[in-house]
Each structure stands twice: as C-alpha cells, then as structure tokens.
Length: 301
Ligand code: ADP
Image 1 (cartoon, rainbow, N blue to C red):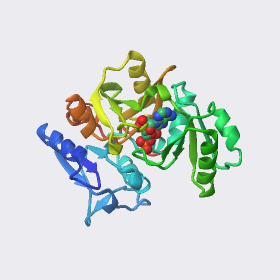
Image 2: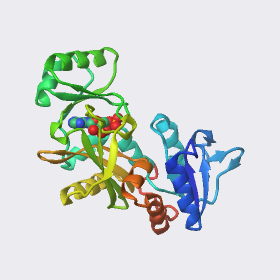
Image 3: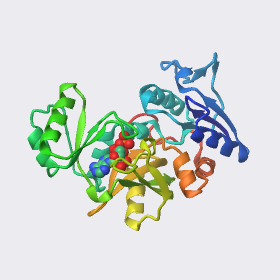
Image 4: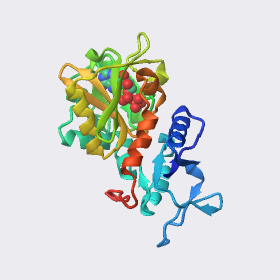
C-alpha cells in the first residue's frame, strides 16, 4: 500500500511508530504536514497539493490531526475522502468526537452510560445546574480543553457557583458533571481497532490529583476490563463511526460511564503499559479494509 499520514510533527512517538510499522510490513508511507496542504475545492477533479505538486496514488490516509488544527485538518482529510482515498477514521466521525458535547449527545441517545452532565451558556441559573447533576462535589469542564486542562473539581456549592459564574463571565462553554468519586482518581482507556478492544490500561492520577491524565503526571498500567466495559467501548466507537479510538471510561457504582472518545489516541502510553503492538495492528486494519471509494460519508452527515 501507499499510505499518507497527516501529522504536524513526524518525530512524535505515535507517528514514528506508525511509520516504522508500515515500513516493516512492506508499505510506503509519506508523512504530510497537514497545514502545508492546500487544495482547490471547486474543481471537479478533487486533489490535495503539497509543496507544488498534487498528492496522488494513495491507498489510505492516516489522520493524526491535533485538537488545535481540527478545522483545517478535517478539511484536508475531507478532500482526500472526495478523492476516494480510504481514511483510517472518517472526517465526519472525528468531527463528532472532537466536539465533546456532540459526542456525548450521540452516545446518550443510544443508551451509553455517561456521568450526569449539564451544559449551559447562560450561567445565571448556577443553582439549578448544580442541582441537575445531583449537587456537589461536581466537575466543571471547559468544552475546548484537552489533556486535563480546563477540568476542575468544585467541592462545595459556593465554589461551584463562583466557578460557573466565572467561566460564564468570560464567555466559555462549560459542562457541569457529576463527580464520580468512587473512580478514585483513575480511569480506564480501552483502545478500539476495527470494532474490537485490542488493549486496555488504567490510568491513576498523581497523589492528591483527581485527574488521571498522563500529561498531568498520571501513571498507566495494563488492566483487565469487564465484559460490560468492553461492550461499552465497542458500542461507543461504533456510534461515533470511529475505526480507531481510545474510549475513556470511569468505573462508577452504576457501571462504566464514558467520559470521552478520543479519535487520535496516543500510542506511547498504551503500548508501554500493555506491551501491545498497536501501531502494527492499525496498519493491519488498513491492509484488510482500505479500498478506493469505501468512505461511508464522503464528508457529509
Ligand atoms: P481531557 O479531555 O482534558 O483529558 P477529561 O474529561 O478526560 O478531560 O478529564 C480529565 C480527567 O479528569 C479524567 O481522565 C478523569 O481522571 C478526571 N475526570 C473527568 N471527569 C470526571 C468525573 N465526572 N468524575 C471523576 N473524575 C473525572
């Protein structure tokens, strides 16, 4: 196969692993800087141009689009889809998961367990928002945050109210969420490829930290997940339409609840915690599934 990987930084662990795995399996792979692609979207012969030439002849494209370049990155990926190139994850599916609220709404509609979550723009009804999620302690999340930045724990009603009002005052979109105390500062990430959980890890926050993000000093170890967690992860991936993703769940008293589905999951934490060759399995998935014009949505929907 001839593969394209859309990535800004070729040196990141996940990206070097994917390149090595593709080459080891006899494929050609070009790393293409997403923001340096440009295109004529009105042409009836869609193409993506890069460094003065058209990108042609690719069997599949691996989108590794960072949160900060979602808008442009998805436009580039969509253009590849218009050309009939098979995407590891489709632009529409990535878009669903990048918008945390949209993702949760879609999962909720299909009966996936979620923490009780409220969303508001006007924050004059802070008391009602707090009551909606069952009172304090509660979690407040900035909709645009990643890597645990913008996730805060409010222990008392007074602090919850002032935080909600403060975020509202600067015009931020926030989610107010039930605090799953029994998760004990840890969460479970199930890594899904092609409708199967191929590896799972438990992340635990540093002492005194309720956020388990590895970027915030959390530690990861392999974990055996329950059948319910497995089916929740697989269903969540399917509902959002993602072939490859990391499904982050909290272990609550009422079963697994999904916090987020990550459509560009990092490989370093999960490969080192579980010893699984995730990069190889991603390339294997493409070997089995990549075919021209197989994209389900072609950018619409
Ligand atoms: P980000 O997308 O920025 O990583 P998350 O929503 O994943 O934000 O939250 C970061 C971390 O905070 C999670 O990994 C989890 O450990 C903790 N956390 C998030 N939401 C809750 C919650 N409702 N109850 C308990 N802990 C939570």
